[in-house]
Image (cartoon, rainbow, N blue to C red; front, side):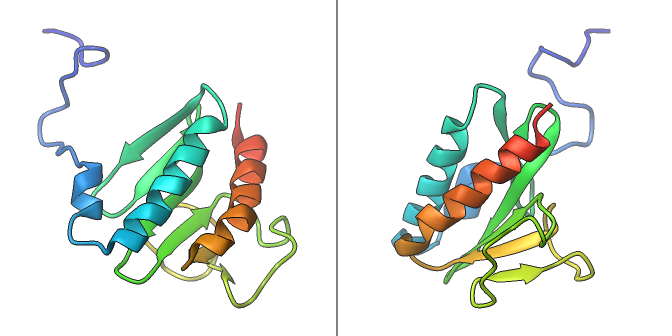
Length: 135
């Protein structure tokens, strides 16, 4: 048998998902926000990788997730791999502690991205999460 790693083959029964599956039928404003977040995340370091699942898009520093996101028609939910106490300054209008709340994705702190003027603030949290979770 041919080894699975490095061959491009997936284990039997696994399904691949694409960015298009998450962006299709989304408003252009949401796609623009996603593209800004995706581009910034990729620029954080050579060890950043993106994994697309059925429910979310995950970003990893090496083998550790540092955030995941989900697109909806009106917002981008970003789940940061940071404790709420680390995500400072905290704003109740755009952030939520999701440690005890069911949610799709990985992360303890939710940041709800609605508009471009939030990107600079979100980027600072993405950078912090990347630095705290890389190995």
